[in-house]
Amino acid sequence: MSELADKQFFPNTNQTKNCWQNYVDYFKCVNARGEDFEPCKQFYKAYHALCPNEWISKWDSQREEGTNPSNFTV
Image 1 (cartoon, helix red, strand yellow):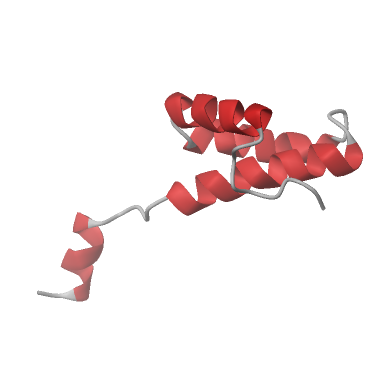
Image 2 (tube, rainbow, N blue to C red):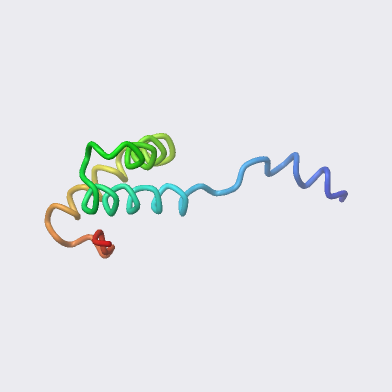
C-alpha cells in the first residue's frame, strides 16, 4: 500500500492529548493570570472545541472536589 493511501484512511490525528493539555493549560493560566487575561481564552476555546462535553464536566467535578490528578498551579 502506498503512503498516499495511508494518509487518505487516517486524515486526522488523535486529539485526546491536545484536548487534555489545553484544559490543563487553561486553568494554569487562569490561576496565574486571572480569567480576564486574554491569552487564557485561547486555551478555553481550544479545549471546548476539542473535548467532549462529558469529559469537561467530569474534569470540572474532579477539579472542584480536588480529585483531579493534574497540577493546575504554575
